Image (cartoon, rainbow, N blue to C red; front, side, top):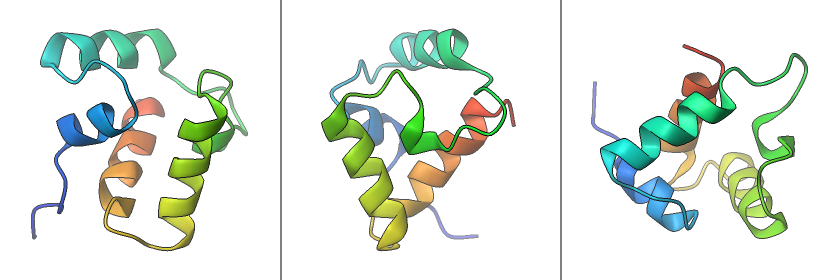
Length: 78
């Protein structure tokens, strides 16, 4: 399996979030699991810009889509 184009840490930096291991761990601990029926980009903890970025990257199957999928899986506890 190929490595994603962007690592998880870069996604967090792109979203303006702490991108070190501790910061990522704290974010995931605070927001996992997503409430049932919540789509990743609709989660209440994103800013409008973050939600738009996540939604557009998935919709366009863009460079970031694979790592956004990984974030989605992580927030569902997977």
